[in-house]
Image 1 (cartoon, rainbow, N blue to C red):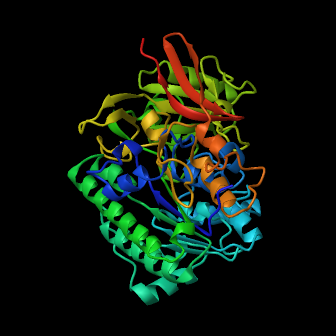
Image 2: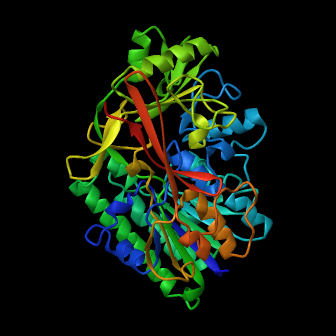
Image 3: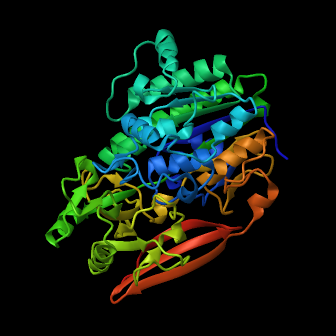
Length: 491
């Protein structure tokens, strides 16, 4: 079994693997060339940051950890608004009402703490994403720094410690050049240089933020990609300058990809006009609505009063709309949903007790965007048209970066098409340190030869009614289905 004395994990939020090229990201491209690159690695559904972060920390899909969306209506916590998992106050409210953690599954941090291993995190994402990577950081005796400040971490003393050494937290600008530089200094000089934890993780909020608002492959986005690549080069230099460099495993990952937006479909307004008064998640109020709805390029729809006849009517209405790409409903069937023509939420690992009554994905395809990158689809809003979005099942949203280097790579370097995904990160880290993964983790140790050589068992399923036909392509590894690509079939 491959072992390491330390593990360093570097996460680039939203980075598409097809954008890791020598011209855009020379340091990362060079690292990939000398390491083991799982080129077909996959995120989970919904392919959103807090969902994916929870899957990275728990080594499992949403059916295990229960974070079923970046935002989701959760009456057990509050009936007044849709829970926003990016907000520290919403996470705290959930924990107070649930009398326990919002993420109840055992995490990487929990397992490390149980074996008296240290874990340090430097994070530049939201408070909710920072929470999700190690929900019980304080209880575990771990250290989590957030560039967002005291309220965004469960270990606020980390903020004081860093500010005393590196000065005030950086201003928020777009692209996030200042934040990228600041967190890189903290990670390379303080965490790796002085703290020297058993596991160190840094989470860059770029290129995700610039993809959203400055567009994929624009000049500004290419500039921030160059900046985070240079930051990665500084981290590698810090690692390679250590006397124990050969014993340190380096894992590079992204949580999801992105596609460009081609137009807006205001599903909430359309549903209201169709007689189903909709409360948007962003409104932070239900106000007597019949349903709640989240948005992006996919979303959940929940019946405020639990009316399943309304749910069925909305599902049929959705499947008649040209804007809709896919529709899911809960079902005991592993493929087909409760409403004819829909897929089951179980098919995409979303069948947790917190799952919504209805999930929709807006139409998307693999045609090129304005910059020549494949992947283009509708959104409900939230970013300017042309900006990037993620959450759905387009292959360019699901395909993630996953590279094992340093002491994590014992075999031949280069790309492999073996089925893999973000759920494999935590089990791999644990096994590298000689710690068995808990049974709740659905991932596997990717350093093992068997995992590298395993071929995917690819299958395609279809569902639909009338003119609506949807398709999902999956790759099976053991009992887990990796989601390859989903969308509406052309008629």
